[in-house]
Image 1: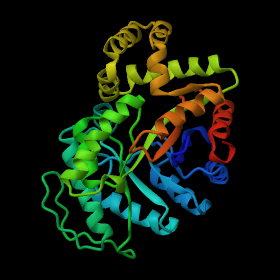
Image 2: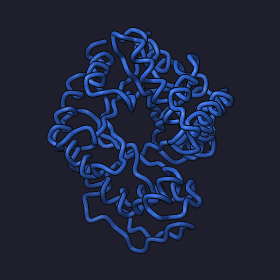
Image 3: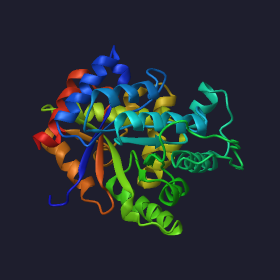
Length: 337
């Protein structure tokens, strides 16, 4: 394909027994030509700690989190952490923000999942003001910091990427953020949702081309393509059944209402095998990239060719073991393509 695009990679910190080991994997990703290395935060290694390690142990690759939420940390905390990391990384950090989900916010943090997009909007605003060096007194509907100012070198540029799925969240991203990290979209679904990103940019009097869209594509590239596809089916079934209502809704709205209902029904009945089998081939090949290295790279190219998609962020399939992840990382690495 002729269109230039970047390839990012998402690591899984909880798979590594030490931060030194995680840093070594990031260094390897840097040598393989990946543009940005990111990772998700659950209940293992803390994002700020991991970002600090990545900033110290890499030199050229971008570093990002997927994602910090405005329920688990205040905007002032996020500002301080992001500015600290950006100083250490010498401009290579991209701050990932997202609203998370009711299950995590209410279950893990004991908070009410109310007005998530408003909280996200105000968080973006406060972080940008703090990074600009302002003494932030903010009269928001959700946050009202008074007299907060970073005791760090400012102004400092902190690009903000938002992980959002729905039209309102993506429109908000286009209006106020610097990048979008979508996940579990088919190529057609991504093209459709990019219209919301462009509309948001227009509402904010911004150039849509100034935003960096990096689609998170879960991948498994093995010589045994059938095994890779089965692992992909397991991952999609898990995401539909257990990963909160937003992913279910997003996948259903992309033309898979009956499949989503069938997968969830089998899973809730305790028949995991039937739930996995209910993920049809069309959905599998659209939502994730699983198969032989050639098949996976072809799917990556299909996403990269979409107008408005600047990067493909490779993530791993949940059931994949360390060997499968290593093989996939090398199969899709820019240095090897």
